Image: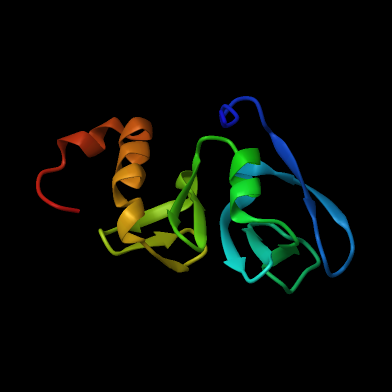
Length: 130
């Protein structure tokens, strides 16, 4: 199934569990997604009036990844990241703009590096292992 193009989606509807509310969120504000049992936690920047840094939604990682544009990549069985919010990364983990450290799954490393190199061509000039 083809994923959405980066220019095609500007906002996404996030259906929260608690409180039961649908939030209209700019896709650029989504930092990362984390799987939690039958739910996902969608971490965003700029959530005014909320002490909780994420929206809890009853969906699967596959479903949400299909809805997000190409800047989002699954880097671990339990994590999806927005490459526009990556601060740094190694072969083992990724540091995000919110300060979180996300583990890099072994089987996701190649696809992660391919996506990063397609968005940041200078990556191809880096020598040695990441």
